[in-house]
Image 1: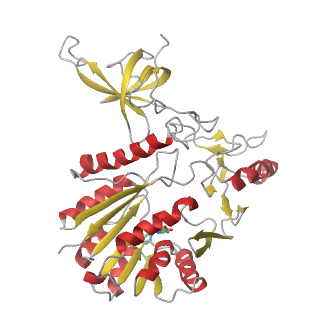
Image 2: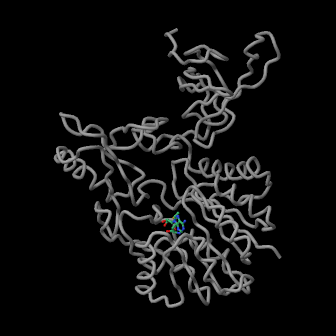
Image 3: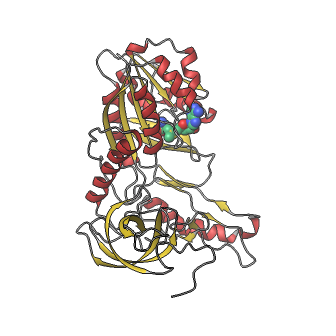
Length: 418
Ligand SMILES: C[S@@+](CC[C@H](N)C(=O)[O-])C[C@H]1O[C@@H](n2cnc3c(N)ncnc32)[C@H](O)[C@@H]1O
């Protein structure tokens, strides 16, 4: 056995101890979870209890050989050495960098199994984080599972004397560094076509970089934009959206119509005449849903995004939508929509809503709240607060905006207090 690192905890496994384990499920980060009976540290003959072992790149139902490299307080981590009995859901990764690159976690899992797992993940989060047992609709698939991402942001470290090193993404299971990514199969074809020249050109300018940097490749109208301040365009149904290439826009254009269509169906119930789009970006939900409502009001903290939302309303000849550049809480001050006839779409960044926003939402008490999120953990946290205040949970519909990755988008519909 090699000598363990200085800070290695010796319980319950030795450094580089090899174990044969059965994988029971997946963690939220996409690692396989096994449970191994172990005796207490201070009583080797004592009663054994199950100890969690995380092993990456293996699937529920598989028997694997794994080599332990770390024991934490209540779990251990191991590298995958060998899959002894493979799951029928195992599939061939679409990228040669799978396992090394931190971008994708599920390329070894068949697409139907990825969808089933994401559905189950939302169900489990609801139950474990908020004690809510609630049906979850099957995760809506992406029409494309490769060449779907309209934006990538490869980065590189400070150039050394010999020039720029790897240009790519965070390595798997690491918090810093990058592995070299010459092609990315989940990115749109035009991005992969442009990537070699952009990488070469960047390397040619190595001397102009005093530190590391992040590149932008945004596919728009068949070309690739690298300037974050240039205008990019995306389409959803018969509407078009302009926005700054470096600003937020949903990264999977192929699923957008189904995604916004679902939010429209959930928001536009009988008797609902008004819509508020909180965290509206360049107006995706406000404008695709506007035809179902008498009036729509959007709020967005980024002045440039709010300005693009106004311009997008004009370009698409939508006259019943107004946009406020402010923090989302501000929408409740000026709004004159009767709450009983109002639906509110909430699509915050990963950290979820502020307590102030939640308090004001509870006080406003809209007829319906459609909560869209790319981070189900903060979404469930906020949902628990709304439920406690008397809102009721209606449909829960995950969408797979990010095939082959652990990321997942979820739309939860709530009804206000009666
Ligand atoms: C997940 S994006 C959603 C944008 C839009 N709904 C869409 O689908 O394109 C979140 C948006 O919230 C904005 N944002 C972040 N914090 C905010 C706040 N406190 N108030 C209002 N908007 C905020 C961001 O600028 C970003 O445009």
